[in-house]
Amino acid sequence: MLSLPFILLLILVGCLSGIVAGLLGLGGGIIMTPICSIIYPYLGVNPVVLSHVIFGTNLFVASFSSLLSAFRYHIRNLVLWRAVFPIGIFSIIGGLAGSTIAAHLSSQTLLRFFGVFVLFAAVRMYYEFKSSDHREPIFNLPVLAFTGICTAFITVMIGLGGGSLTIPVMVLILHYPVRNVPGTSSGIIIFTAVAGMIGYIINGRHEPLIPDYSLGYVYLAAGIPLMLGAMLGVPLGTWINSKTSTKRIRQIFGIVLFVVGIKMIFFTQSQ
Image 1 (cartoon, helix red, strand yellow):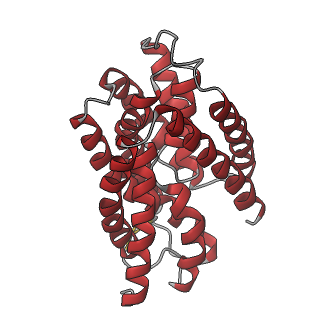
Image 2 (image 1 turned 90 degrees about the vertical axis):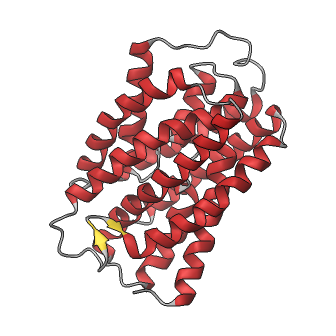
């Protein structure tokens, strides 16, 4: 098992990811991935399976943090459930497919593509504050189904719950009110993260290099403290969101997504 200092460090990392999850409706992977890529080798995780273990464990944590985040936003009536269920249900298909492919293929090209896309979306989201808020929201089933499959397929391959891609889609394409986006994203991530986690468990069950106390590519020894920390951070994140203006939330979206894009490009090049 892990030593107490590492457990406390992982709880802290999980808490930071939970704050981001609660504030922005993300899964928290943008915080956990770069930090855990440094921590896990010290815990004995083999470099050959490092990325898969990080991604599978991220999705394990996101499954719990997104559930709590969605519940807290639901209490404030800020979740568009008519969008959550179609996008979420079809994201199961994309999540299972993405995790299966990720277990067998290199995702470096996809990571670079995703990084460039997120950088573009971040710039647009940061500077366009009003254009989407006054357009008719889209709840067309084929559009939502396509959104769920595509966003889950891409993000699960790189260990994210999907929020970093569904958020710009919801704001810039589906024209959902920014105030409803974090809660709606959290609801969708429940489906995406669980599907992706199951995929990483199934595809890693016969991998001989996974660390002890793992379930497939889900590293439970690290995932449980990360999850506990995330559950502590989510309420703080949702509280900060309730005290922040719509314009400021969108600016935060833009800044965080810009960081995501840079991190994805950098992380890919360092593989």
